[in-house]
Length: 82
Image 1 (cartoon, rainbow, N blue to C red):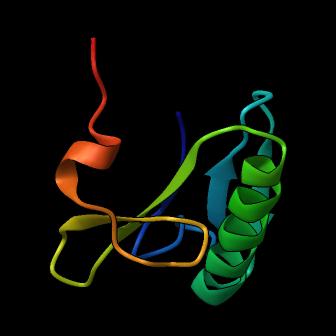
Image 2 (cartoon, rainbow, N blue to C red):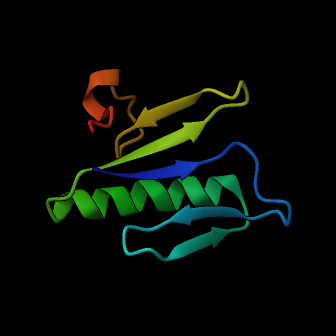
């Protein structure tokens, strides 16, 4: 399973950086743009048979996990094994 991690705040230069499965990174000017991309990419990857989850950091510092439709996932559905 691949994870898109979207932090609450951007980098020191004001960019939200997402790591891609191929090792490349994508930079976005806003958190909203990063979330939109993560959701679209997760949906496309799922259509191709891959499992992708989106982890989003809240203002409280807690990371929450969602599917491509931005529906919350239960803990056991996304926990990493091994």
